[in-house]
Length: 461
Image (cartoon, rainbow, N blue to C red):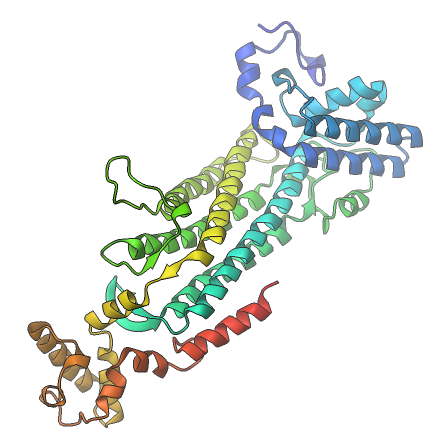
């Protein structure tokens, strides 16, 4: 058995905690990253205690000065974290008492580690969301600039990964942008819901001291205090909601990654990625592997797993706080780290994507991508759409047999399927004509792409 107990709470115990149990239950190895926010919350708590008459001027000043000194020591690497002190809260409080004496023990008046950690995580996650949304905006700006440049570039649009209709490459990139618009808004919404201050809920029932929770919340930049002490210390909805939003961002990045991997393959050869975002093979000298998008695609499963972990963690917990909640931090921390890294990689890489317009256009020509345009042409000539669909289907079957795209057939060949087809048909069978004809809000016409780009630039911060 250990020959010492945690002096912050050891009065109830007649023997020390087993050395293995001390390591097993300690969280300092991962929650030490909350140090800045723990100190920020403690400074606000000390100011509130002084305002409420619990601390004198001198006591508040000593506590704040001591905490600022500890912050400086941590950032200079002078602190050795103690497993025996379990977590970031106890480590900082113990060092405060060592630094300023008995006054340091007064800081914990009117609070518990339960409301303290709930506050720390909210402060930390709020800052991290701000960094993540900044990266999303950086990626969006890169996409918008590239879409503007590629508004006239024609590629095949796909359904079922089969050539469907020609589209502008810029239009495709703006579809990615729209995914990120929703991601950005979800994260801001998540930030609004987490921006409430649990401090003052204490262990679970509040405190008998004359605290001012509105003042504490104001000092920390929260919208207001949380309303129920039991919920305040046990709620982790905000962490789950963030991980759900993060999983959606990663799902979008994974879909983009899949397309980048396909497009860089020799079978598609639509784009090239800069060498600095790729790697080679140890045995095959010709290889240029799209490792960044592949790894982002792989990391999506990791983030999805963290979401399930947190949902499972919370599903059977009775009110109020339980030790289970120590397990909330590592999935949350890793989700944030993974998401930030993936967004940074994409924001750095996307502006440097190099398109290969000739290959894209040739692929669009090979797949009868203007078949719908021919059907629409026949409808304009007075034919019912279902009949036009059948006519064009027969023309495509003929093209498959003869190895000809619709645009490569002669007028005589096309008229063999319908007398309604005239010389003007070739205007609608060209790739550029097809793309330009979809000239409406949300359509793929180049001027619509540029309008979407213009609107995005006005909307972006």
